[in-house]
Image 1 (cartoon, rainbow, N blue to C red):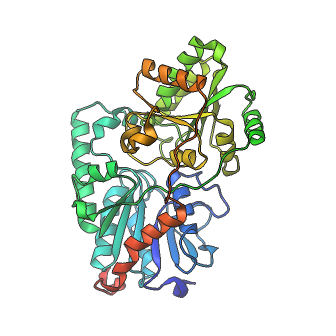
Image 2: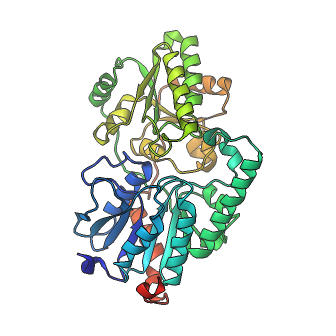
Image 3: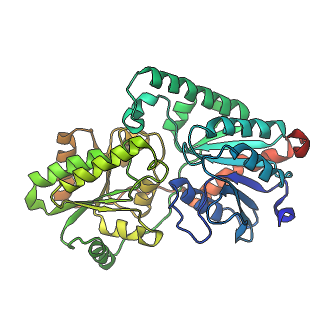
Length: 419
């Protein structure tokens, strides 16, 4: 098994990944991302994914060219030794891709171990690239998300550590990937811009939703077919503005009772944050606001893969009320893929072209949001803009274009001796 995949042209990926036969996004959004990405590489491209240990430690094949190797436990003190040791069995793999998002590998104890892993790979002559799914240049913009006081000593210390982490990643890796130009601009404050490459978040062409499916989808969520359903999809989070939309929509619905509208909040708790004290307090407050909304909010926990299409079938208009943009949105990509109408906050609209966002942007205050929502409900709804060239296959090829050419030019050291 190892010998077939232990080749110089194999691409090694360190990332979260679904359990065998499990839900693709149950663990986190990056799990779903890597699952879809790996499936869309050319069939002659061998892939080894080094992921968390879920139900079993046994490696398994996703297909003839994709080997999944459960490698580490989340938030483990042995993260470094587990990853380096397991990849040591594939010593001929030259190219390593890390799909990184804060907290998917664990908490604070993972960060120094990740830098140690990058150092080990550099010593061994491997070409390491990192896809940063999140980029935060200033911790203060996430004060509500992290439950810290803005511009406090703690915030300043965290900002300093964050900068050290980004600079170190820039030095130790061959390239840094991000999903859009806004994130590139942010991370280039700490990393040589020539090293930073934009690979857009892929969009599946899901096609338009038929009327009969839309009606049955509304019934699935307990909504009458004549009800105008506003949608918010994805794990609940402060930086995404989940609480902001729930509070302001509840007010809007009570002030416009004749409109027959409701809000669908689909996704549930964040699996990577739900164990933290700050998030427990945040989610408890969410439930209280939903309860006080007089039945105008339809709330679901985690939406299974088989029911995701129903969310988009039932919803007439999606809203992305982000307080700050620190990552690309998988939910937004699905929205575009299903060609659904949407509204976005100014923060979220940073990297959407003026043509695409025209008439869709609101400020994070009730008046701006209520005016725009009212107009969209009363007007004939139009779908989202068509975005070309961002299929999963095209994006997978972009990764290959950036990864494989260097494999023949790297200095080769004996992996076992290096460690």
